[in-house]
Length: 241
Ligand SMILES: Nc1ncnc2c1ncn2[C@@H]1O[C@H](COP(=O)(O)OP(=O)(O)OP(=O)(O)O)[C@@H](O)[C@H]1O
Ligand SMILES: [Mg+2]
Image 1: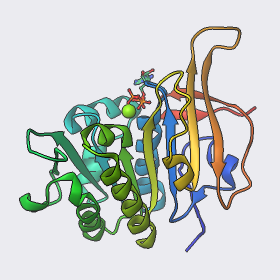
Image 2 (image 1 turned 120 degrees about the vertical axis):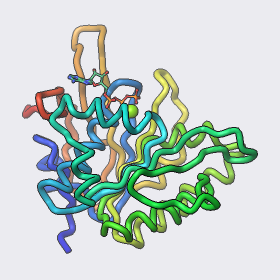
Image 3 (image 1 turned 90 degrees about the horizontal axis):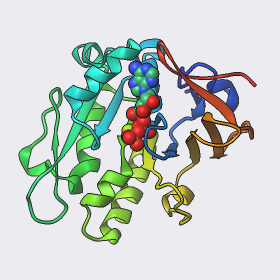
């Protein structure tokens, strides 16, 4: 198998030697509204449409129906991918259960009700991967999961478990992480993952605009510049210097 996993996002892949390192996990980090969800969704969409690689989206932040509707403005038809068996969306909803209270649901993947909690997320993803032969996974977002966890030890355990399992299945994974503006604590997950992308949206000062920076990418000779990011008709584009 090729050792790069092209995102198909215009202007991005040539910054990372042709694509993300395959079978690795990359964190997409940034404050609200910086384009993390659109970037990651394009990775799944272009993967399925341009490279024949089905994907799994674990959506904790937004309602799946609303989200699919939003993506239509970028000519991204996720419903079609679902119908064609190229995408499974696993929606996680808050419930009033005891413990780690996220309930997992999917329109196109049967989840055993006994398994439909975040503690079983790894197994549920594995089942979805088997169903459509997925090669790519997006988790949106880690931060929402943190909220639902009562203790950080079981969260850390889940992340390590997820990381290990997805790698061993050969999946290339994007994990979205919401950064709080001004927060200087270095999150532990940044050290565990193989790559970190940071998206920013500067609205004041001499140099306003959207940017993308590659903070780290193991196994890759990558760009060290600050790149301009733009929302075009088909979603995010990274502009040339
Ligand atoms: N149709 C559109 N055309 C142009 N820009 C858009 C369009 N839809 C969304 N955007 C831009 O994308 C931003 C949202 O992108 P996205 O949802 O990927 O951000 P995010 O980083 O995931 O945000 P959050 O942290 O809130 O989840 C909007 O705030 C807006 O600036
Ligand atoms: Mg988002």
